[in-house]
Length: 559
Image 1: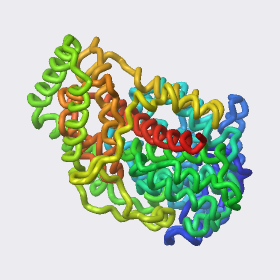
Image 2: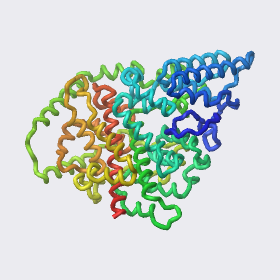
Image 3: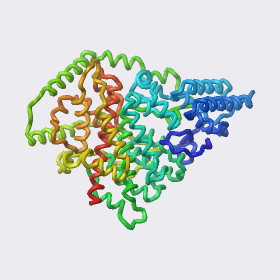
Image 4: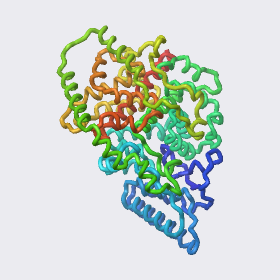
């Protein structure tokens, strides 16, 4: 509806064309037929880095809304839904108080003049983490203002990640380079590849976000009708998309050769392919983070708002943050939870003091034991999920999903030994060779998340958490078939309780099956920021594992 000049942002700019307004979307009986009353440039100007420009834009926006209201005195003012949704989004997430307060005031004025305004259905960015904690720990961060000024919004992912601002900064730099900087792939192709990847994990959030990014970048609307309407060259990514999403260890040079085969009309150059691979693995791992942290739909997304919201009593009864639920969870098993923390602390101390060395054979045996035990770690809820048509239309071979690296009774593929192929010694250099600067950005993210620590653990301070962070990282790589010869995998069993293993494996391998019960079931006395830290480790460890398999396959093809 809003006529905006395309801006190359990460699927999150000011052209908030709702999915329901397109013929290929599920119909929306509440869709407004009124014409836009506001030029989107008025919203875009709110992102100016010039404070005076922002103030002028805010006044112009205010006058436009009030003018519309005045022109309809005696009748219900006619303001299109997309304008109302933009006002709602700005009122909820803009980090500049003068802007979000004014947007809220304008919505109230419009409502007082008979316009039905949308209400956000979610209480905050996450269904798992209380909004107060997100705002208290990460709400007043310069990085959020920078995100708003550069992307046009502060989305829920950014708000949750802001609990760890050092990581968020390098995440946003990498995301900007991947989606907005110069590269071999057209901008709208990049967004479409993200849609294809996110759909493998039924991640409606990313599909909606990048659907709009695709539209802003001038993509052909017909492609959004489904994967079958996309160009053949894009559709040829489907085989490696499903492998990287579910069984990356099966990706070999044969699949690479099929894509870059010389003489093929739809062939991929190596430069194009490496960017596509990073986009795919970025999207798969980010989908894990979204599911793992229970990230709610944006207020202007389908499922994030309603013009006829349920009554407060109904909403509070089902709220994941209702006091009865939270207080009951804290009271129940308090002493057991305290005991779990103390036991973990003692185990870490014992392992840190342990000086015994084991033979290489013993280390391999312990890895195989851990890998075998991981077969018994399965999601608590294994019922099938049926994605909406707006997601499933971008998926081929929907039944293809994660299968344990070493299924019972089957010959396992060769383990990837980190000493034979690692990010530091092999992947980094090949990435920089094929995709300049991206290797450095990815390496920065890996290092930041691995070294991220506040020396706290639940109620304890001054704690060295290196062994715990290492155990989480190596367990994720273990379930993806990667082994470190110099790591004692018995540490994983000592440090990671079963409920945490179930959560980690579910988020990494079956993210769409993650539940709030799983999230609340591990580390019951730990801060939410510490659980988000686990999800950041999950995101990056999964990303690195998939990249290692892809880069190894590309390297073998090149030689």
